[in-house]
Length: 273
Image (cartoon, rainbow, N blue to C red):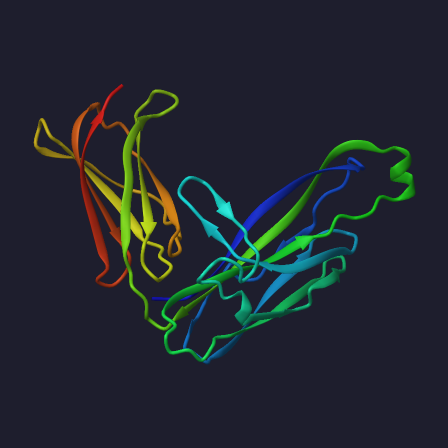
C-alpha cells in the first residue's frame, strides 16, 4: 500500500470592489501526487512548487487545516490537529508561510514530516497544507472607477498523507445502493456509497454487474472513476448504465482495495421508468 500526497483544487469566489480585469495568476506546478511510506520515528521531506503565470507580483499565504470528506458532498476543513484523531498536522513543519512570487517566477514551499516514534501508530494519518492567493489592494485609478464585481482567487489544498508502512486494518461498508433515471430520461444511473471503516486511506477500483432476473443472464458490467476515502469518511460512486432496459436486476458490486483486499455486495433493484 502506497502513501500519497494529493493535490485538490478549490476555487474561492469572493465579492470585492474590483476592477473588471482582475484575474488569479497563481498555480501549483509540482507533482499532484507524491508517494511515500514512513516508519515511526522517521523524518521525510517534500516540497510544493508555486508558479506565478501573471505579469505582476502575487502574494500567497500558506497554512494548515485538517480535512475530511463524505459521500453526501460534505467537506470539512477543521483546525489543524483539532478534533481529528488521525491528523498528522502536528508532525508537519513548512516554510515560508507568506511569500511574494514574481512574474513568471516559481517558489518552493518546503515541508518536513517528523513521524512520532510511537510503535502503536498504524494505518493512515493526514492533513492539508493550503496555498492561497492574497487579494491585492485596489490602486487609486481603480478606486475612482470602482464597480462591484467578482474576483477569482485560487486556493490549493495539498493533502499530506502518511501511511505507516503496510500497517492498518482495511475494511469498508457498502451503503445506499440505488438506481435513478437520468435527467434527460435516456437510461439509468446506479449509485452506491462506500464507507471507510478501517485504518488506512483507500482508492478502490469499484465495478458492478447487472443480472437480468427474468432472462437469467448478465445485462452488462460497469466501471467508474476511482475516488479516495479516509478512515471514518465515505465516497459516492456513480455508474452510467448506458442503454440497459427497465426491469428487475440482481446487482453485484466489487471493490478492489489492492492485494487480497476484495469486498463485494449483492442487491436486488428495480429499474423503473
